Image (cartoon, rainbow, N blue to C red):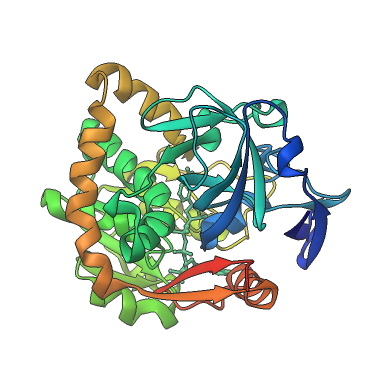
Length: 362
Ligand SMILES: NC(=O)c1ccc[n+]([C@@H]2O[C@H](COP(=O)([O-])OP(=O)(O)OC[C@H]3O[C@@H](n4cnc5c(N)ncnc54)[C@H](OP(=O)(O)O)[C@@H]3O)[C@@H](O)[C@H]2O)c1
């Protein structure tokens, strides 16, 4: 039995292709293994960042590919088409981290009513969130368009939720305004939505000229400024900066402009692919990566069992109804469609209101 896998050259992300690989005979699967058909997945700039950081953060180890190539992880859905685990039936739907492929073999472990974990040895070097699958069969929140939104936004909105919580816990570090780069990105507008709802801080979106209209239309940014105009912002107001773009020149301009009024500078993303190797010393708060799993662990302890899920669920309920007006979901099927969306996203050619749902199945 064959699987189709979409792979990219690890040293040149512009080179990509679909290959055929051999799958185990379902009848000969090892004990407790599942053969899963990857039915659909989302693709955003976040997935490109997984590829950019594939070596550093070990993302390439999750889904093996031929020498020199990597399979970019994606969030989406799979259907169990063969099961050697007595607790998991054929036909079950799983939501989680998948390869860009038609199939995945999962070594099912730690099965509960709500989910399971892939216990495969090569997947254990990353945060557990990347090995967990939710069992979502007949859960309406994961079906149809609601399911598309989950694949597109749930992992991003968890980051938005945690940054909002972290800023609030620290009383915005004394900032009166929060600046968000790549304001048009889904991660940024999720955070803008949450900060805006707090009503105690001004939310300023920084974006490209071509994305201003979209960012303004969202209604959760109090002000929208293009990258070339950031120095026109009043420099005497204390600010916090949440950086999805990862653009070193922009970060330096902002720190030099705001100086000691830069109260917090958190790095989250790399959409612009222009991070410098050696970052200079900058005035104001020292830029630091915001590592969501650390903050999730801290809150899980403080909020107790189910506390994170319950609060995240409430935040999601306030956010997801807006997605119908903010995003146009498009679906692409087959290797050519997958390649086009991958390259368009890599090269920044996807409109910000686009939500790309893909499948390698024709
Ligand atoms: N640390 C974490 O745990 C974590 C979690 C979630 C997300 N993130 C990061 O947050 C970032 C946003 O992810 P997303 O999936 O929300 O993005 P997205 O919605 O796909 O963002 C699209 C926007 O990113 C900018 N962009 C994308 N590709 C570009 C390119 N090639 N050149 C220049 N600009 C480009 C553009 O915004 P502008 O014109 O407005 O700049 C574009 O409108 C990613 O880097 C992601 O990895 C990190």
